Length: 92
Image 1 (cartoon, one colour):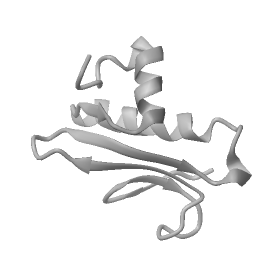
Image 2 (spheres, one colour):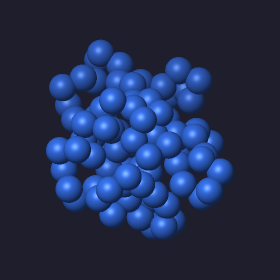
Image 3 (cartoon, rainbow, N blue to C red):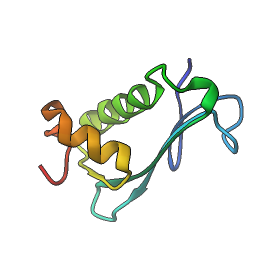
Image 4 (cartoon, rainbow, N blue to C red):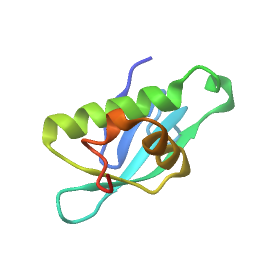
């Protein structure tokens, strides 16, 4: 699975306008990002695709020294469960 970057996030699929999986963010205006949505097509569910996208975004955030604000319920849950994300969690 190739992960591609768009202005609004990272996605998987053939068409950015209708991706099979997407983790979407918006700029908070202070150099940090709010993770607002994670979507995975039913054909990919159960394969850990959402976590792959989240980890890809976290790697990007670490490389760019960006903090992430979890708004999406999936990311809120992951940030609460896994302390390894604390270094990029804006609210940790």
